[in-house]
Length: 153
Image (cartoon, rainbow, N blue to C red; front, side, top):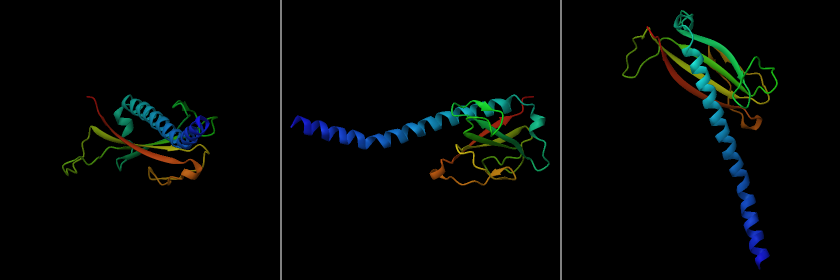
């Protein structure tokens, strides 16, 4: 009888393992993504504001950056352990809430796309925006974050 109770309990616990592991994986992804966003925003805040506004259209792509599974920046996509590709776009003509389309000359909106790309698949970026779709079968997940940076006079 006791053996039956133990077997029933173990089968139940083993059935919950995949859900627990998936939740743990998602929590790690969220934590690393937050760390990457914090690092990117800090780097942009330390950049001279005039360097962020190099495009006549008001939208500037800062280029792709690559990070490993711990959130450490890597020099290139071919670096060992490159899992995250980060695309940063700066819009110096953001439309603010309230419907005002007047550009704030000392305000920039950052759009940070983080792509989990463990297979290092080729991704397409056009005019500063990400055009890749999520593909869970190949481990490709996309998250988008926004932040505002103001010119300090």
